[in-house]
Length: 216
Image (cartoon, helix red, strand yellow):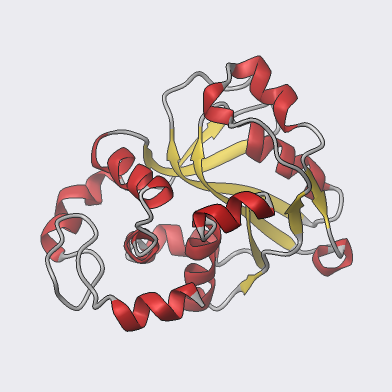
């Protein structure tokens, strides 16, 4: 519903500079950021790798914060377009059967009005013609905000928060977990562990990697 409203109310304009046009990121802004958007990897445990697209700094940090907390939901179009313009990133995503966004607790989602990872995941899935499901991985309860905690507190805070619904849907499938930011990696690590037992293959993709030190 939100996507349809955005398409009807907001004509395409660049989410970076605000210039109206036919795309959600203009050619000039895309040239300016293109070299900073690359599929990179970082190990957060011995066996878990997080793939990320850019560092959580400068214009990327500013726009993610606006997207999440300033009710600028239309920016999912800009982030999706940035992803879809990169052939290597698209080829990576297309290897998977499902994109599964990291969920929000239902009360938090209602308060914000949308889950930022869901909007991008759904847009990507439509463009690349792969399955999207936001009801497989669910968040059972409200926990403290991760960004307010240190590394050890984050690990404890996230335990038991997520669970699977209808796990048979992803049995022996290749799953891509999608999130916006990886800081210590505790959130995506917990989601990975829950899904892992049911799947043939599982990977993690996030928009941005924070410079906070990684989980050991």
